Image 1 (cartoon, rainbow, N blue to C red):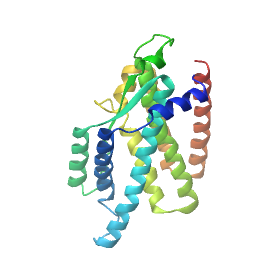
Image 2 (cartoon, helix red, strand yellow; image 1 turned 90 degrees about the horizontal axis):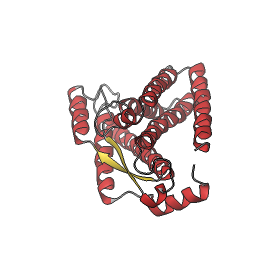
Image 3 (cartoon, one colour; image 1 turned 45 degrees about the vertical axis):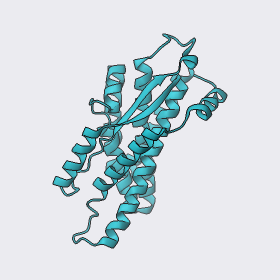
Length: 243
């Protein structure tokens, strides 16, 4: 594992979104916000409440997507790669059509994923120098892990405040995490599947377990999710330290 100083140097030098990524992320955020804000939960439509709901959903979606891909970019730099967000137009189209047909009752997140490129001078001396499918899978897994952490954060906020926006944020992160594991082109799931079958099955089971615990909206479910998250983070740290 690279030192904190080296990682900080790589982040300062490489961590950025290029113009193509920015335009792709804007499209992904607006399309996803429209899908999740389509149904504001009211029996009658009113522009004022709907616009307010749209803005709230826009903030949640933007925050979640930004945090997820920043974490993946930093994870890639730690391994000696750069990560670039790739928009999945087919997935966006499917999500919009399903959302339109169901009037927002079925909301999907199929926006795409990251593609990694190894940085030659930062991979020198690494075991099996060159592009590694396992390292690529590790970066993709961190996107799902980010969704799990955010889901737990919003579950805690929901538990203490009972605000509807936190319930929506919780559901959004769970949906995004689960669907990103589908083994389709340009989704994290396919990258993980090709990198390590065992990792893929483990993260699928883990994501589903966290989903059940958090969606139960119970105290024991939330406590167990937090404990499992802590154990998982500790194990990930120990594994990384041994590299």
